[in-house]
Image (cartoon, rainbow, N blue to C red; front, side, top):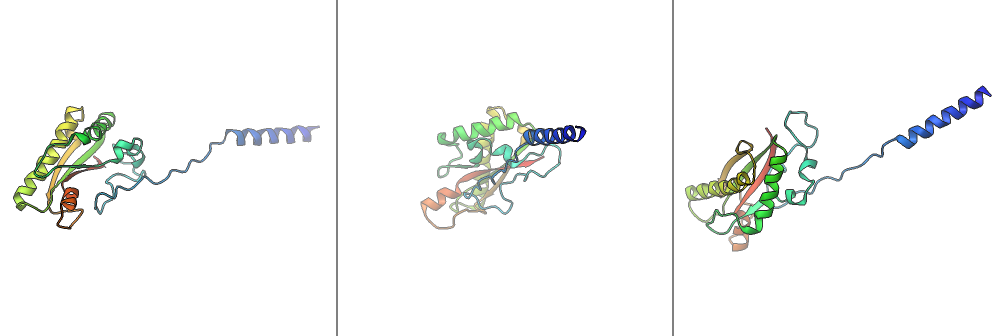
Length: 176
């Protein structure tokens, strides 16, 4: 009788343990933004960081609008195009929601124009994105501006299509 009770008790414990176990969820790797050519990936932690204020790639992949991290510009313009308002507003909301988030805005231009002009234009483009982000509630201290001008093209052909790919601001997240 005692042996039967022990066997039933052990079986009950095993059943309870199996029923309460959590399913292991495998996460797929986040999509890679192939519209940029960087050597550091997408500029965010891989999820293994224990640095205070750091966050994982999964945080930025929760919304499809956060996956878009390149804002394109018209020729000789530093004005954020209206077709990118929703994307920039989405990033502003993320920055409001995650005060520890830090974002570098990298301004780029095509090859036309002098080096000095292009560095200035890249900085003005990054500044325009910064203005929209802060007007939507992002904290100025979360943002860093950098201009590369024409120095880091994503396309090197001499065509309008290619030049259009180089007129951009890249949004690079990283912990502070």
